[in-house]
Image (cartoon, helix red, strand yellow):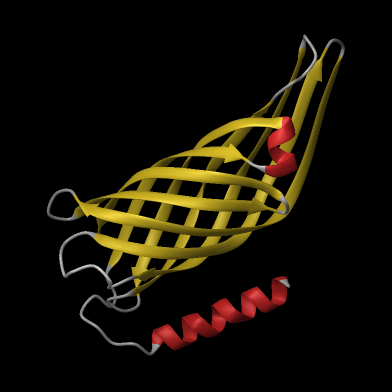
Length: 183
């Protein structure tokens, strides 16, 4: 499954590299605040997650961008016995493609779909009473999302998105508020 998804992304990137448009070559950087609501069995053990991410976009054409993202995300354990704490945290390293849809009238607001995949370099730590435990693990991560960019200044935009963050079956519904700056 992982090889199929990676092959599909690489083929899409090669296809997009051949596209020509006025936005081609435009780059932007952005940073945002993330809130992650765990779902499924992950939500049974972990509370709301928080963190920040930084993103780089490179416009291949007017409607497509390739992206890179990293940051830091953390969740706290819930329903734990008195005196026991647990934290799951990590650094996601993601690459993706962003597609800007055209169903809206021409205007400055841009709606997009975004698909990212990569790795989460995470650790689980817990402590209580007399012991402390820490375990590190690297997990495959898949992140489909939808978002909107709203112009804010001559070279900037507010970036709002909702995503499904799947870290090897540790899933969360995430919301991100960020600012994007054209460079």
